Length: 140
Image 1: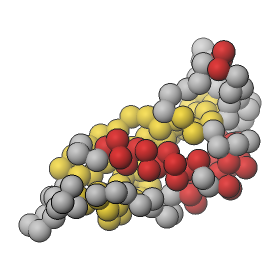
Image 2 (image 1 turned 90 degrees about the horizontal axis):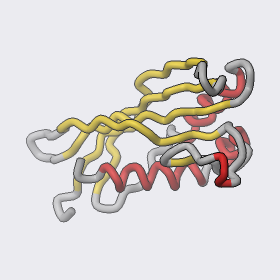
Image 3 (image 1 turned 30 degrees about the vertical axis):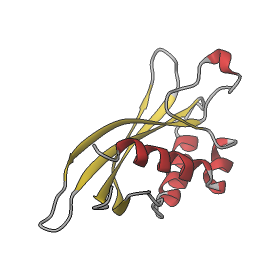
Image 4 (image 1 turned 135 degrees about the horizontal axis):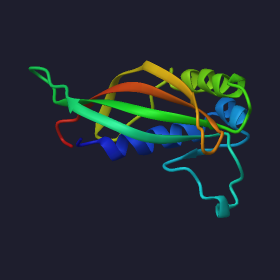
């Protein structure tokens, strides 16, 4: 929990800077929450950094935490091909972990993904869960 906001900020900046992911999204469309219709951001596709579960991940010599983060991909396309192309670009972008101040990402890996159709909005979505093991710097 100690570095949850730091991790989210670093991932946000890292994903917004990825040109291949931006190409799939039509721009650096990464958000903390879905944009409001009045925001001028336009319709999907975009990614929201959402739910997170944090558990202790300490060793005898290091303090840390395991963060399970959900990246939700939203698409207005009728099928799932756009969602799956964005999933692939997201996976490529997360092959390299961002640098954290006062902490280190020891491991960042894919855990699971689930796609679905939203009945009310008719949007397609994919919830992609990644696990980041974060070691804290002793001086932090």
